[in-house]
Image (cartoon, rainbow, N blue to C red; front, side, top):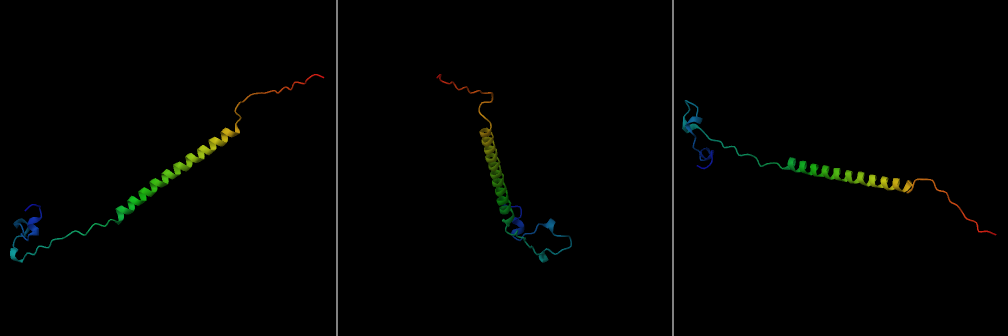
Length: 94
């Protein structure tokens, strides 16, 4: 007997499981076999988590793109040199 329930599987009922006053020849062992696991829940959870992760990454990419566009537009609107300039034209004498 290698497993704890091997004795019950073989149809042998330990004496401590039989209630007092019961004839052991009338005891029937019914072994409950577990149903196969339903994988729908875990698979759906994994798909939803993966979809959420992709959504977060795409949102971050969009925000970075908007920030880059805004920085580019701001840099183009601000003049490169801030200051006062005067232009003087020299006339050639007559």
